[in-house]
Amino acid sequence: MRQRTASTGASRNRRRPRRWSPVRIGVMPRVRVEPSGIEFEAREGQTVAEAAFAQGYYWPVGCDFLGQCSNCAMEVISGLGRLSRMGRTERYNLLRQRGSRALEDPRLRLACQAAVFGDVVVRKSGVRPDTI
Image 1 (cartoon, rainbow, N blue to C red):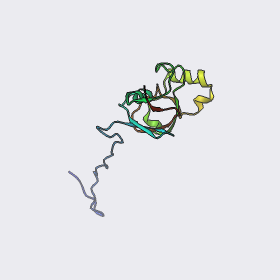
Image 2: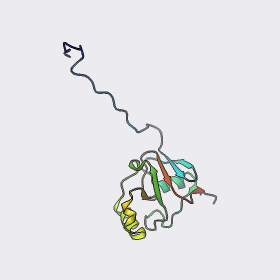
Image 3: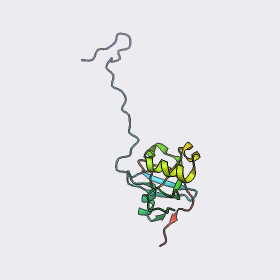
Image 4: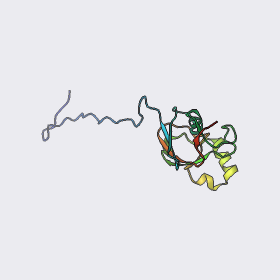
């Protein structure tokens, strides 16, 4: 049973306000690519490059999504927390291909390794509709 305080009449056992989840149920995450303005959907957990190819876009990559070439490297403009954490393979190959300075900026990611878990905006030149 709730007790009321004498001065305000407010309940001591107040419910906390409901926190709304930032995840949109039933809606797939969207990836926007600048400067081209291309936008496509990605299944949750799908990498950025895989989602681009699945939606009919060409994303520059040279190693069949193995994370070895860094041709697919992109800059994350917004939504960094909505991508998977950088794994060992991605970290090693960024270091090997781009040097230690590449690891200092968390916005530099490999599109073939970064899985999407929410809306993101990235910068990558060369992304275009696949004409082949």
